[in-house]
Image (tube, rainbow, N blue to C red; front, side, top):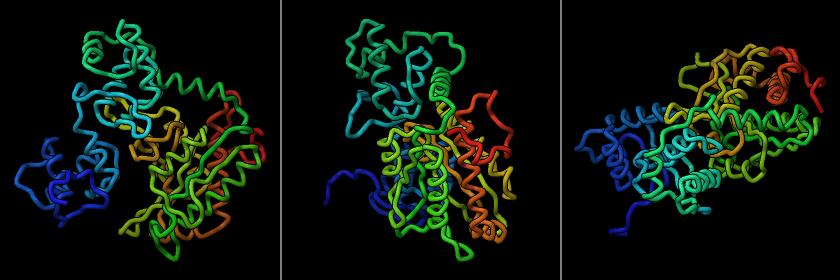
Length: 379
């Protein structure tokens, strides 16, 4: 309808595309100083600007604007003080201004669960506590008077990152036993979205098979394990994150395989939430990612592609520490042959379950990487 404001793209936009959605994307990139004027088509210059933005923001670097990249571009336009910040239950505000607010509150010693750019109940509580301390109306809404107070106050001296210290304490308080804990296992893709395909393998099928193997092993240790999708379902990342949050899980593990146009690309990599913007990261997520990566590398012959920080929706929007695994390349002859072997999948499943256990083991009870076996897990 003519004159109706565009509310955000509902598809995927790439080189050659035109239209109202593309015009809005280009306009926002220009306002961010990432693209010169004079464009009305998604050209190579636009794709280059998008790739630069994605790299800066810890997103998948493909030069394509899908829903997740669009949301990140939209978030980037906000600066602290541009708008009123308050907790909206049905649709929490997101943006760089929220990131800046959370970082400032953390510097001042007010508890923010995680710097993720999402104005949720934890951020509202931190704002309310700050307002009480400053003698302001404690309504949890960040308006002009609260912005001014934030600008006046200098950071307190703290010993390390408060959010990291709180997260570590939560892990310690949970105890070493797996029994009673809750883990969400997220098989990537699904439904009509098969993910990467190669050598007769589909990413969605491998992910679901691995998830079932992990679920069975966790169940045997007394863990409440939930799969984020059924065999023929394919929810988006926002729905998967919402599901994980509804279960109040302790950890979330997202399972994928990788692929490339280059058949020589191979190996395993693990991702956790984090980027350099305002020091945003999940300390326990990073620890968990390292444990998973090392266990898989120690038990298999997959190339070590290391751990990396990303801001993908599932990693950012889950309240619990979450990791995403890319377990081999189905487009590589060696990796695909290994992934096709049920015995190899059992080895990977055991490695992941052992890593979950090791998150909770204190140093004096922990084992060397690759040495702990399923039968030795604490139940």
